[in-house]
Length: 256
Image (cartoon, rainbow, N blue to C red; front, side, top):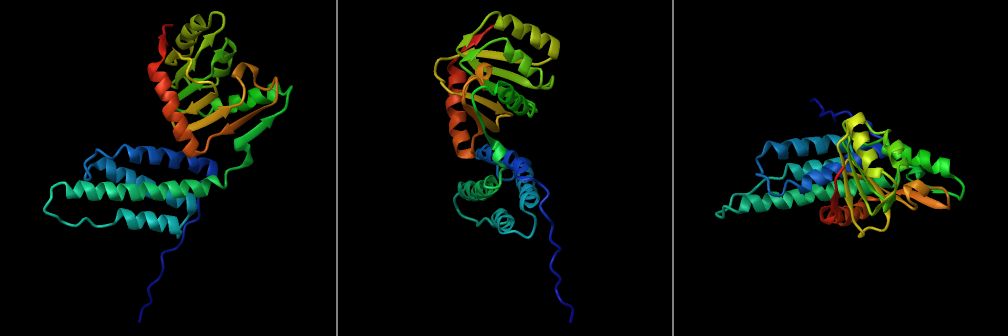
């Protein structure tokens, strides 16, 4: 009698620092599916992509990969109520997102210590190069949140690609900051938006709406005094998104 052969396992292919932003983005995309028809191709694409990301993150077989597969293949049961399928879908979506959140927690434990870096007083160059490395990771959009900005910010932003949208949320701008913004956008091909607000005290850099960094000092002064630069964990980042985007939406648009 022939024996059943188990499918061969696959090793993980994503490093933790690669997996974290992918999982964060998938969680955000999943939350946006709540008003989508359960039979929409968007749902199918999302579940297939998420399943692949989990397999690449943990390898197979793995309990987290199995849990996601179990939830996404759960059957719907017929009911007299026309609202029942949507209700079942939302419940399934909640469970799938919960699996992704659990996966993100597990992977976050493996992040290298480089996600938090302390700079003693007098380490201006070290702090600048660290921030430059963060900025350089932007693919689609970068948001700079800093109450005090000067022309040095444009030197830093030459490290982003020409297709990257630049948003700056600030309170005070030194010198001819807005004029330089206009010239920067014209020369480098970036879309630049600036808004003013007094609602945000701390400094942040957000990459592609998914990766958030907290700066313990203003960009122009980082390293002058002791400071910490750290990547925000997903729960804290989610809270920061709400407050910062609210301040952006209510802020005064600055013409350039």
